[in-house]
Length: 425
Ligand code: UD1
Image 1 (cartoon, helix red, strand yellow):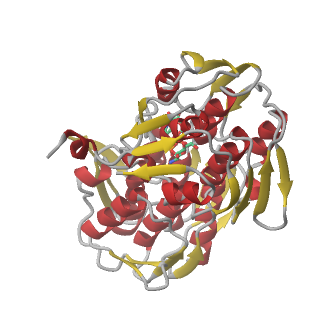
Image 2 (spheres, protein in one colour):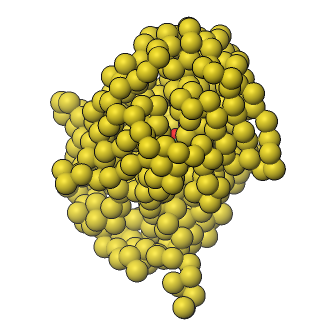
Image 3 (cartoon, helix red, strand yellow):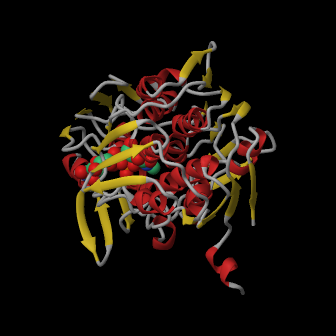
């Protein structure tokens, strides 16, 4: 096997495109993954339309299958899941470590079967990513949580019970995990300092469609009246705000004119505000559609990556790439993860003037970027180098694009549709 095959596929991108045309956004990764885990809460069918065709969904599907669930893509593209045949509550380590969302099988398995075991979750190496709020939540509901080797084991004697739970940090997957467990607990659970991200809201709506009684959705305090059982449901996964945001940044960065269709425009205010401040024109075009245009120069802007409704940490790296082309000095503060700066070294290889100090970065621009050989070090760092490649002089080769495959459906095809010359091999 040659060295390239060992490294996996790569993109070769020709710089200099001005993005033009329409692009359709796929289903949201983080909403889809949580919804897939929710299927473990019932023995009836959960049918999810608009689950994106990304490797994180594939690996979670494999994991669910390995514990005994039935997972299939129907001929209409929807994913049908059935958790009726679950026979083991021990999630296999090699599949758990592939992505972060896989730890969210813990809440449903514990609530429904009284036992769950898993190694710590995987996902991008973007910080310490602890799971204490998940575990504290399970314990508050009456579970015993321990460590056997590297595995976490949670068990309960009979049904979990309702509790008042304070989340030390409004963790997205922590809120989703504890929320799923609480739906089947005996009595009322209150989650204080819950994450309010749209993907958490989506999960709560799906759970209610399955018969759960959750109120306060969208707020920082969720109330859950436990029920004895949940039933099947059908839902459509919301579009991905991070994918939509990445294309919006691409349009603004290349001085393009792009209509983004099927975008969750109403949950992206923070990005729209920053792109406008940087000099882009954002034109809303009715439900789920937005046009992003830039004709003048880009200007420096400062931003902080924050929990929702602040600017999403997943858009930090793409925005940093954009700011390499903006006039002036931009200051970025990362307030969610402690290791979001993996993109910095790669952008510097292309000529960007960025320095990072801990959780902050300072970007000076505009700097002409040059094609280079770079790596997609995590899914969003990968997006940043792809964006940089679009405006670079010459050709950029991006290695390790399996990271991009985790979160972007048919990225190459969509970029080609907007006029970018790139190949994948
Ligand atoms: C999810 C998303 C990810 C996104 C992130 C923040 C999924 C599969 N992934 O990740 O794409 O970037 O939300 O919007 O949905 N924390 C604790 N204790 C915990 C858990 C988390 O202190 O028990 C801290 C983490 O260290 C981090 C912050 O909370 O600083 C955010 O983490 P969290 O919201 O849990 O992100 P994920 O759910 O892992």
